[in-house]
Image (cartoon, rainbow, N blue to C red):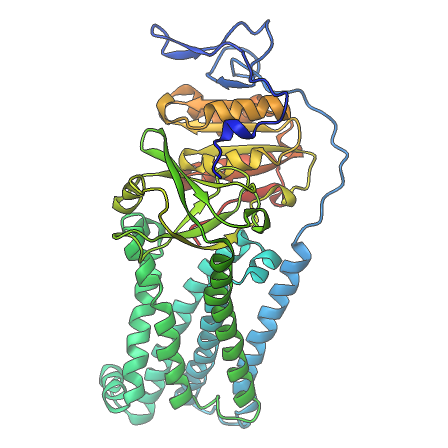
Length: 507
């Protein structure tokens, strides 16, 4: 049933026998074997006083005449047009319901702005939940990276719009009643039952927005962050109830069709993506733990067994959300990428223990039942637009990069960033795959202040390792700081956005 990686090598395959790099204490650098010999497929690379700035070099530049592969730019454009069409429709409900001359003083102007921003906020909330539904067709159509970017941008816009709605509505009522703004706000909350639910929904929305800021999120346990984030469903129920009860623009002939139809679409997507698809996936494959194998410092791999794995619609580079039914972890899910290309015998996840839950996963016994959702992500070889590729990984980001290497074309380059040599995982597998697939692996090891790591994400440093970088697809996975630095350097080198592929599996 379960076979380790070594048993799945191609017939006739022989591993690389090149000499391993060695440490020289007087220099504190990794010294390469004699470069007059065949260049090893995997090197720990350091700065050197040659023209490239590196002690070992990558492959030579090759002319790339491959036309771009099918992309999702047309899909994104259509999605954006549909979004703004729906937004315009929601605002037009106010326009159709407003009589000429209705806005004739400051109070009516404030009320009009409040009503429009309320409609916009209601529409944005529905779209936010639609993007959180995890329906496979939406992600395949748009792409996980764009969904994540839009989700974050719309989340901020939603909070600002809701707060603007509150301010203008309260101010408009205060002018009409000739009362103070604070007194009028308190009167609205305490005299209208629906406003209590709206106030609670606003508080939850602001809380979700605050914990979604990167600085705040990094300090919260993932389990707590995820639990708070799920209250967005409660925001929908409370906010929509407020709109139905008090919204003046939801009772017209057209509005009574538009808003229920939009609600039905979002609820159907949530039902399908959160319940039907996961239920079918788990009934069909019945995942369970086959073995847990230590890989290195605080890192281990979970091999997963299941039925009909050859029919699992997963690709190398994708991630799934996993719920391990253990006594202390059955109630939470975590996104983990596949660290080997899917095959008919097993799946593999590779986990770095960064908290209590992930550390306990290393203690799981074979046979532990697993529930999964997915697969998710467009971080796959099928999204390539060029003949060659560059894969950049840092830390636990090596998991999807290791899997991707199995599907990449010849002359692929892998750059693997780590703080210490003992943090390098899959080194033997990477070099065996590089030998088999005519690829190259370069390890950049050291603290961020060491010469090699400091040079890596500079224009000259990256060009020294990958001279034809702007003619490659670039796949990036790692800590946010590494990804941000790499993207900035790649843009300096005029690598088009269409050739950049990021793995945003936190969504």
